[in-house]
Image (cartoon, rainbow, N blue to C red; front, side):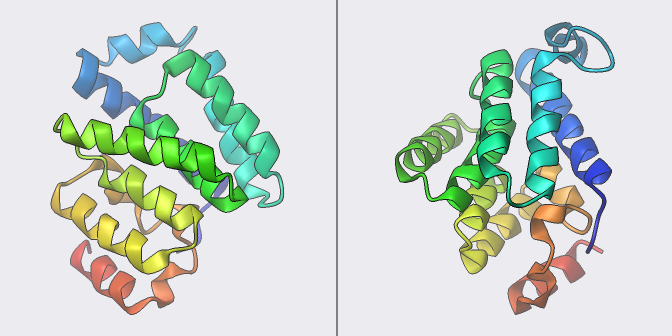
Length: 171
């Protein structure tokens, strides 16, 4: 299940594109939010945050970069998922609770955010709860669920029996 940081970055870029397409119309909306096709301040901040996370001991830098992405894109599910993962890892309970509540708010609006909610649980190392949410994300055909095999966030989880079953379902 090992993947390069590049695959994680591609996953998030695609998640952002899908979110904007679903919420605001054509992909052009995302592109107009970015200053160029190569990214922009928000996109660059997301990438920088993800790169810090691949180093595992740079949580404060990762969170700072995620906050920059938030300033550019707003508190949308892909950004909240990333921030929730980071706050779960760092033990920042107040922000974690706020993010969790916001994602639940998106769910009450009819958006499927099981994948992002799974990232929050994963950040807290609640692997079984994360897998249960990932199962729902797969059932709902959430975009992020397509990358379970290659997303470095989930490295090591293939040893969990329920994750093994889930990975077999998506083959």
